[in-house]
Image (cartoon, rainbow, N blue to C red; front, top):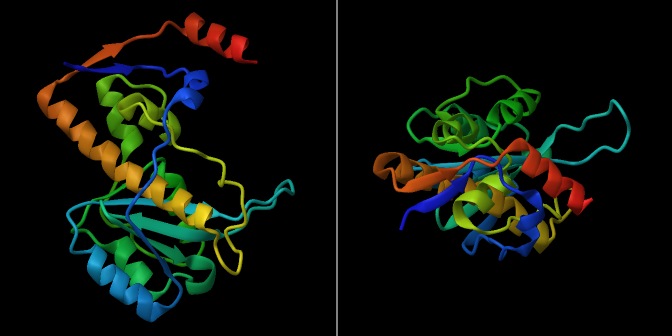
Length: 217
């Protein structure tokens, strides 16, 4: 049976979906020595998912520096606390690596935020948003993409929490790890579908999406 994809995904249906959670090991990285070991391991992996978090600012015109870099394989995610580490030598080595593909979403924005911590030359990064369009998918948020490709919901409840807290809460760690891991899952599924053609794209008329949104409001 072919997988059904939609060019535009109805946001109101996401709440009905089962929740997707990263179930692997989550490791918080606090020092350069820990970062060195984490990066040594990560660069042995065939593929990595990446994302960042920033402590929210509720004052207009005020933007904090990126607080967290999360990097995941299939079964482990490292959370680099950049508010403590900064752009350490190991973090820079990871960001400049050209051997392991690192999959992100709207990654240009993340790179811009990371560059505020120090200069580095971006390595091998792949932005999912550039590639899902090749299948005709137009809704590009992580939440909508994961719902579209896997029929599961990624919660965004922890997004606006304090990412510079002395100790991250378990829910924060799970949220951050899930976002990075989801990029790996989406990219692998995207490659499979492009190779096999095992999908059917359903195009939703713009007026249908607008009607759904109006009813939800």
